[in-house]
Length: 77
Image (cartoon, rainbow, N blue to C red; front, side, top):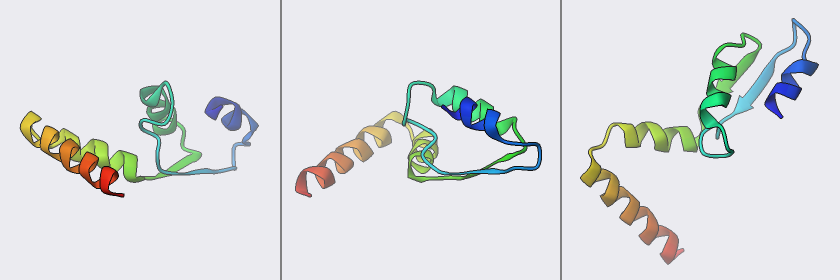
């Protein structure tokens, strides 16, 4: 779908993507590669990217703790 949208753009057009590129489809890495290499695409980092980047900076015990905290918040509504 992203490739189709890019095919519709002219050389002076711009595509702005507002976050959630990660964990919202079957090929997050492919999407990141496409948007990184196309100067017409501008991306604003969303909450999914923040979660991913935060997880990359944690050790495994911290990740488990964060997941447990997240599940508690979701369960409590």
